[in-house]
Amino acid sequence: GGAPPPANAWAGPEYLAEDKQTLHERSPHEAGMGGGASYEMDGRNSFGPAPVLRAPWGDVDSFPGEEEAWQANPHQVNHLLDRGLRAISAARQSLRDTWGGYYEKIAGVGRSPSIDVPSFISDRAREATVTRLLHAVMTSAPYTIALAGHSAVHASGNHFNQSYSHWLHEVLGPPLAAVGVQLVTRNHAMGGLGSIHRSACFATSYGADLDAILWDYGMTGGASSEIDYFFRQAMQQPRRPLLVAFQPATGRRGRAIDFSAYKFDDLNKIGGVFGMLGFYERAGYHTAYVVGGREESLRSDGFVTSSVAQAATLPPGLRFLSCIAENGQVLSQDCSTYKYDCACSETVPKCGGQASWHPGWRTHRLRGHMAGAMFLDMLESALTLFQAEVHTQPLPLDNALWHISDDLAKLERAAGAILINTTTPCYGAANLQLLGCSVSYHCATEFLPSVGATIESLVVAPEKEKGWQLDTEWRDKTRECPLSGQTNVRGFYRSQDESALTLRLEGMHAGVIVLAPWGVSACMINWGQSSFPTSVVKGKNVSHPPNAKLWLDGSPISAIDRGPAYSSIAQVQHKWSSSAVELRLVQTQSCPLSHVLWR
Image 1: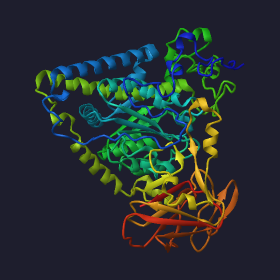
Image 2: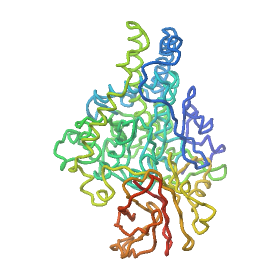
Image 3: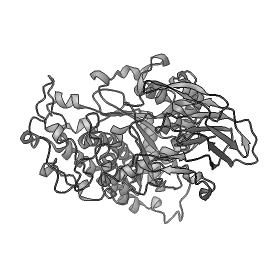
Image 4: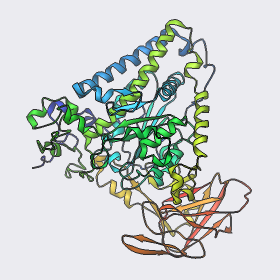
């Protein structure tokens, strides 16, 4: 049978005594923090947009009070580097204690793709990331990483602070904090949907301040066209983030990764995220890769669980992670029994989403530690380089070692070459072509978590929009399981009558508007003169007749087309006296509105 209900909802029955995780003994906000590191994945219940840390992140040629600045003081610099390198040693020791003889398959970092390494990053991308980390140290700027993906990535079935992001932060946060850098980790994955709704609203969904974006949409958004669209949006962000992809060591039906796809030059042969990363890397953009599921190597190396008693002899990280032998024989049911440790409340011991296709916290720890170890390796290189310079060169550190302007310019040129290439998979998808594979939008959405504008924040006169209401059902559902800290919210506006909703849109320049009920409804907001083509929804043909009227700065809009996934899109030929415009929407038939995009 299953494990008995826990006496303490935060402790859970699954852990052996020596396997108890300290994250359960502290609040989600405190878990994984070290020395002032910023930790955004704290399961806030306010549902407001996550804070974006603003700090000067461009290059500087001097420091305030140059002679007294720590950057010019050998004593202070040596102490800082000593703290950082000791924190890295402690993080590595913690990984060794957790994984034992499996440590190298968690912490190893390759320079070229191979099934034998848990992660790899090219020499060029590695050097640039080392420079970026040194830049963060020298300027005390934050280092920001976001995780994008589906429900298995979001941590469905688990506590929010048991996700990949938490475990990555546990490895990398304290060493960065030791050298004065705030690590910001955002778990902005969302269950049950593909990636288009997040990609089109990239800066709003993930942040324009990213240093790295981790992609894991293989289960719901693994089509090459969606992958291409996602990364095209990522590489347009101001900091030109490192593109990192998770992918299991074996794909569907147990097939091993085809590493040759990384080197394909024929775009017609590119398959999946691996091939796309290789294409971007050859074009000059920086990428990295983490091989997600490694249960096969666990079996081949003999690190399988055959019983509770035998599990106690394994390193903590390997206990109950795999119970299947190489011949496919199930050695024990304990892996299922001990898969999850998540309670909704003291009276509801099980969190929703505990499905066979969702990984438990142990697998999240495996993947998060693998990604964290890759960044830890580069941070160690950065501090070692800094230390070597201190012994031979005068301070402050030579600008050439930590200035990022040249690298940002190279990435901008590489991104530009990729963005004008119309032969990549995105251009094979008509719906994405309609959005524009290489154009970015301003966006407001009621999907949370996010870091940008909500539709509610755009409403011109809330007191007059009585006929429109923000649906809070998804928010309310999260409160049914308060201890999980989950924030997977699909909010939307809906009209109750034919009253108007007026939104103020800042930054309009091209006259393109997209209204969408993405992830909420198959209804389409049609403000045109005729019906859209029918769609097949749950086996039935559904028509989309005109159901709305739209005005831009008082002028009616009729130019319209059908967009991707039930959205509607218009290119308006209009000149504005300013970049701020008012959009007025009246529906004759209620249809949810979850996303508003404009450019």
